Length: 185
Image 1 (tube, rainbow, N blue to C red):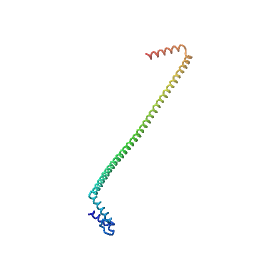
Image 2 (cartoon, rainbow, N blue to C red):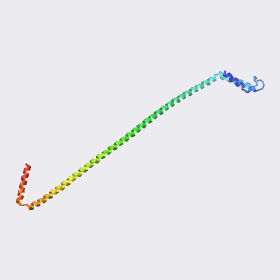
Image 3 (cartoon, rainbow, N blue to C red):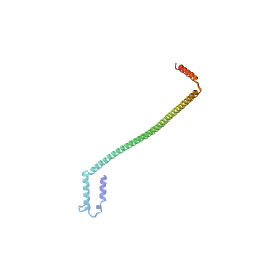
Image 4 (cartoon, rainbow, N blue to C red):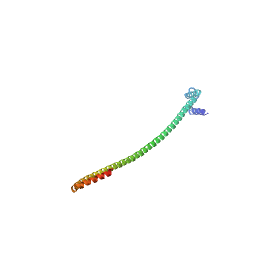
């Protein structure tokens, strides 16, 4: 029905109706053009060109729809990949932060251990130095004592030798031998 109305509208709007003289004559070029146009439209409908064009358009629409669906799927996959990469990026960032924190803690622990080792080394060296000082002091005291004993023995010998008679000296020697004999046996 709409096709028929379209044809009537095309026919009514044609300049052929405005022409003078008989319209339905083959000498009227407007009529001939109208007949050629109607014949052309008839041939198009006979060979089902509108349905072929409609089919091609439907096929193209289906292809476009499939491409849009594919594009939607690709977009969703891309969004999933992006989300996955974002998660991995966050995980890597967290892992890097944990590694840095552990490294800092290890460095602090190593610094504390080095400080403790240094303090222990210093304490050992101080003790060793104090022991050396004490040993040197004891050696010096012993050397002074030995020297004092040697000097006092020499002085006593000279004093005793100058004040003692031969008889007292023999008596002393006998007493010394007796004391040594008692202590050795």
